[in-house]
Image 1 (cartoon, helix red, strand yellow):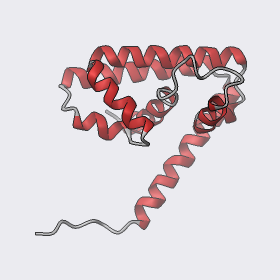
Image 2 (cartoon, one colour; image 1 turned 45 degrees about the horizontal axis):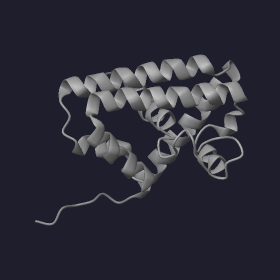
Image 3 (cartoon, one colour; image 1 turned 90 degrees about the vertical axis):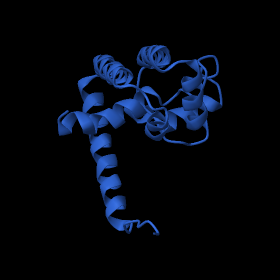
Image 4 (cartoon, helix red, strand yellow; image 1 turned 180 degrees about the horizontal axis):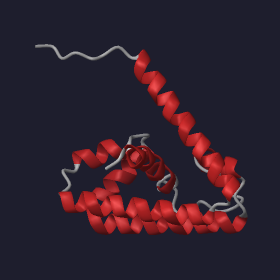
Length: 153
């Protein structure tokens, strides 16, 4: 896998799963929870109502497809971890997925990203790319500031 793909996967995951903790019936216009969820995700992209609907459908599709691959029990664990502020990547590592499952999840993430790109305008895609680069730089800076951890013998 090349470096570009590795850098895009976390962003695609975060975007496609950003509303997993909010059921579709709750994340409706006028609901007090919806603006809080949007702040975490795509609200700064100024999505139209139609784009918001399409993105919600994409999130639902992604969640359904992932559930088919990892099973309902593991999917419930992922959702619980997201609600408690946990990282999806760490949860997936703990699941001891087979190589076939990992490959299937990669394919789902890539398809989700492709569909998301088709929903967004060129300007929105550029803004999203800038956000991703900014997050990557912040992660790199925070990693440089943290002292290396050593294990006690």
